[in-house]
Every structure is written in structure tokens, then in C-alpha cells.
Length: 434
Figure 1 (tube, rainbow, N blue to C red):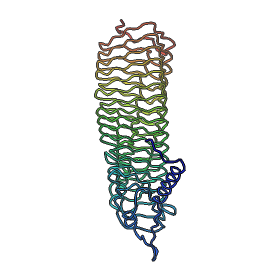
Figure 2: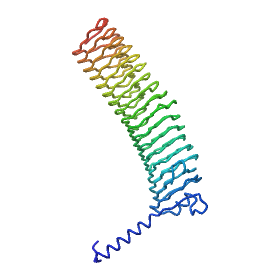
Figure 3: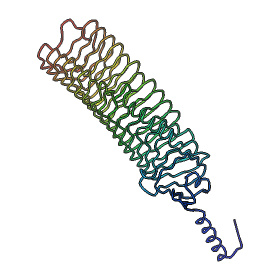
Figure 4: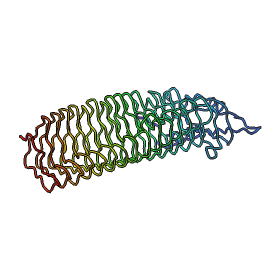
């Protein structure tokens, strides 16, 4: 806009408007002291205007507050000394900052229904239902937050980001993300819950990075992914569970990148119709590494799978792709393919198994390239019950029984295959080799 006002007058007007803005940012003090004007958070919120800072003295406040203004709530001590026995609901597109407050002993904690909440250095303890509930139109940022001993820790249908948080001891899922929810979580410890650590459902999209999940022992695996959810775990450690590391159901997709899964019993990863992608990771120490059923799919790349007492990779009526990976030291087989399963193994090593290193049966199909199978206590590769294989540029050696067994109506196409140094003959008799 063009104006004829002198520059000096414009400058005075700008200073005046700036002073008005400063005046608008008020500090409101809440205290339980006798002469305090505001003895409850609700009273302070009622009188507050957008941009105001509400400072809360140590004490216990038994109230529930609905906030429709963009304000800050800041406790003036450590959160365990600024206690809210009640809930806060954010509505009408408000933007709210909450710092140094402990939510405890109430039916619900923080509900972000419509708007944004930034929660820093807070605690949520013994909340009956959802400690934190983010609705479809809600947005949440958590930093340095502890959530413990509640019904469900985080219930997310909207968007949430969390960093440096500890979430433990919930009765239900520690974290649930459903609907079209979006969760990014970094540097978190999620442990010792009574159900799943993370439950990813419906059309949610999620990323966990540099997180640790451990110590869950229930009928649910530590991670449960189902419906059409898609989740990536990067640089995460998933360990010490009697219920397993991850189940991937229906059309869900779960990706592990540079992760370690260790000592999850009885199975580390269970796929039933979904898709597991494992890249540059380590899966070790358990009964079974990966099971894939019902047209599910597992893609394993640059990964080490080691030291399971049962079969390492077990695939029934489903498919598995192994690329540049190592499968070693198993109590049974390295890879089992059955009931029309398909397995592709390329540029990989399998060694040190007590049973056939690769067992293929019931019309299953094996494609194998540029790989080695060696130092086994049994057969190298076993094809039976009308199984088939296409094996090229591979080596089979120093397996204690036959290196290759092709029997019971099975067939194999061998191209540039080296078979040597076996304790018994290289091939079992009466085989059909194409």
C-alpha cells in the first residue's frame, strides 16, 4: 500500500504496534497459595488470550481443562511436583505448549482433538484409558516425555512426532496407530508392557528410528502390524521377548533397516499374508528367525541370520527372497520351503545347520544363483515331493551327508554347479537332473 505519511510517523506507529504485541503476551500465575488470584488452571485458561503464558506453581490440581486458545502451560518445578489429577483437551485448532506437568490418576490424560500440542518434559502415569489420544485432526510433538502404567500409552489417529521418550508398563498396547495416522518416533525406549509394544493398524504410516523395544511377554508379539499399515524401523533394537519380535498380518508392510532382533521367542518375525523387508540387519538367538505363510512375502538383503534352535527361515505357501545374506548355525534347516512356496536365493551363504541346509518339498520351487552351501551336518539341498529347482553358478561342499538330494518326483536344472568334498556321495541315487 502506498502512503504519504512521513517516515518518522511510520516508525512511531511501528513501535506502538510492537508495544501492543508485547503487552498481549501476558504471564498468568496459578498457585494454591491463599492470596493467589488463580488457584486453578481452568480459571487461568478462561481469562487467558492467545499467546499468553500460564505458569503453574508446584501442587496438585484436581481438574479437567478444555483449551481452545493458543497458549503455554508451564510448570515451575520438576513435573513430579506439578501434578494434574485430570485431563487436558485441545480443541478448535488451538496451539498449546505443555511443559513440566505430570498427568496422573485420572480416566484420561491429554486429548488433542483438533489443533496442535507441544509436550515437553512431562509425565503420564496411571491414566485409566489413553494417556495421550491424538484424534484425526490433531497434531502432537513429544519431547522428553514418560508414559507409564496406563491403559494405552499413545493412541494416534492423527499426526504425532516423539523424541527421547520412555514408554513402559501399559496394560494395553504401549503405542497404537490407526486410521490414517502418522507417527515418527526417534530415540525412544518402549519396554515391559502387558501387551504389544507397538500396534500399527489400518492405513497408518510410521517410522521408528534409533529406538529400543524389549521385555514384552504376552499373546501379542512386540510389534503387531496389520491391515494396510506401512512401517519402517531404522537402527532399532528389538529383543528379550517370550512372545516374539514382530507379526505382520493381512496386507501390512514392515521394514527393518540396520536393525538387530535378538532373543525373541519363539519366533522373531511372523508373516501371515503381509510383507517383511529386512535390510542390513542381524537376526540372532531364538527358536526361529522368520516364518512366512498364506501368500506372504519376505525380502531379506545384506542380513545375517544366526543361531536359532529351529529352522531359520520357514516358508509355507508363500515366498522368500534372499540376497547377499548369510544364514548360519541352526539347530535344524537354514531354509524350508513347503506347499507351493517359492524361494529365491542369490549371492548368499548357508552353513552350519544340523538338518538339510535347504529343504524343499510339496511342489515348492527353488531358484538359486551365485551362492554356497557348506559345512552342514546333513544334506546340502534336499528336494522331495515333486519340488523343483533352478540352480546356477553355485557351490555345494563339505556337507556330511549328500550334497544334493533330488527325489520323490522332484527335478532340478543345474548349470555351472560345483559339488565336492562331501562325506558321502555328491548326489543321492535315483535322482532326476535336467
